[in-house]
Amino acid sequence: MTQMLVGLLSVSGLCAFLALLLEIAHAYFADYGECRIDINQGTKTLTVKGGGKLLGTLMDQGIFIPSACGGRGSCGLCKVKVLEGGGPILPTETPYMNAQELGSGMRLSCQVRVRNDLKIQIPESFFLIKAFKTRVIGLKSLTHNIREVHLKLIDPPEIVFKPGQFIQFEVPEYEGCPEPVYRAYSIASAASRKTELKLTITYVERGLATTYIHKVLQEGNEVHINGPYGDFYLRHSDRDMILIATGSGLAPLLSILYQMAEEGIDRKATLYFGVRSRRDLFYEEEIHRIAASLPRFTFVPVLSEPLSEDRWEGETGMVTDPIRRDLQDGSQTEAYLCGNPFMIDAAVKLLKAKGVTEDRIYFDKFA
Image (cartoon, rainbow, N blue to C red; front, side):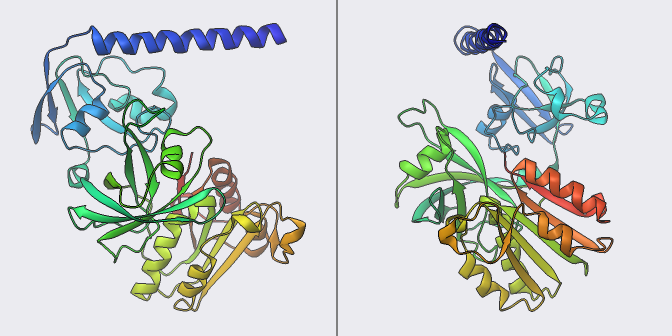
């Protein structure tokens, strides 16, 4: 067994090394000259230097495609339809495509290299996404591993977004990070405050972006973002609402709660917020303040591993446990989920079993 594992690791390492060599070869030796990218049947035509990935090439031209992983091929969000010139689909793309997408020419733009002229199709809404220059006006530790980043918009001075959407944060080159990288973070602030944004960012060990944000970023620093992105937002109806979050997945749901309070949306809504122990809870006071404007809103924090010193008398276990007990008939319910993929998969399964139809379950997975 040990020899087999060593062999598999060796093969994986060799593949990674060969992939790196291929990228270096593309970057330094391949010369594809100028290439044309025709977008939406001539709506826009670009002349670009060939050789780069389509995602980055479009970004350089001010056209931003959603990407939660920053172009690493691990989120599956950066889909565009390539009508001509993209070459064969790669094995790194197929896990993120369904049969219909595979048949229609859908591709991951972070995996398509611009080697020749291309014809692509993208949603018109992508043309509305903008790049913003901002300044850090506040940094706050919300928990031992979650940091709030408060940004002031500089140019353009305002952003319009739907509560629940996210932006891409540009992490500049710094020690240990040889080139700029982009990561997606949901907006935690109210959409009515158009001149500023708040983000809640969980530290990931050895993560290029979160290491920078938690250990390098300072108040006064200039930050470049682009957005907004995403179709995770409040749908207007009279149905009861279940909101489920874990960790920093609370951010977009908090923004939705601000919207409900400010617009006087009087719907029965319950927020289930799952964390490990008492020290991992945050924004409690803010949620209770918002709740004062929402008479039919209930907040249910759930601790999976409360410590003895927590003296916790509230809900315990998985965040889905109280939902299993509380929700009897979900046929007239909408659900909004944000957090880690395992929680979301479990919650979707439970909600469907309780009668919540799939088309009324909206989620944003934080990988």
